[in-house]
Length: 231
Image (cartoon, rainbow, N blue to C red):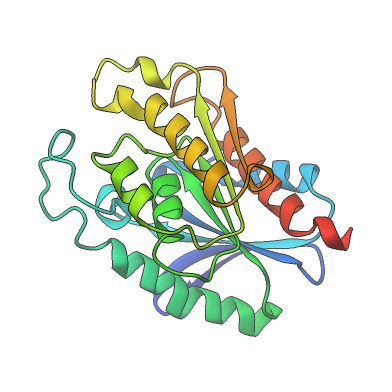
């Protein structure tokens, strides 16, 4: 069942996939993803064997609301990085309490594609309320990512990472660092949360291919990890 609802004045899409959901999925949703999210949800349902609920919160300014700090090599908008905590606070103070009141307290997987994947991975170094991360083609090219990750504990149980095989071949040298940074991040996660609790999958193609399929695999992996003991 799909609903468009307002949570504390902000538009969200709520997908209730089965009775008595066992996992809550949270995804920042850009305007460009509205045409693919229905297929993403269908693919997740095919890949998991438990009911779940997804809440996708509308993102009006993709760069401003999801980028944790300003990268001068890739953006001239100096206000980028000033609003990311507002997005995180909305999720933890409004979206999650609303969902828990309606469905009960559930394990939570936060995830997204591109900048939303970066946001999800950043978020679990800031708060302790997420149980898994689904970071599909995350924008870990952002300047100083490895230093940030090394200096901050990871407050989650499971992390899924993926990347397209051609993403590190981008002409922009800053963005082309994504391959090295994702490999570094995967090694870092294996050391900090354990090799059985993280994964890095490589997909064919560049950054702009099959985002719904890649994100569905990411969320499905998280759901299956979080419910493995109950199956």
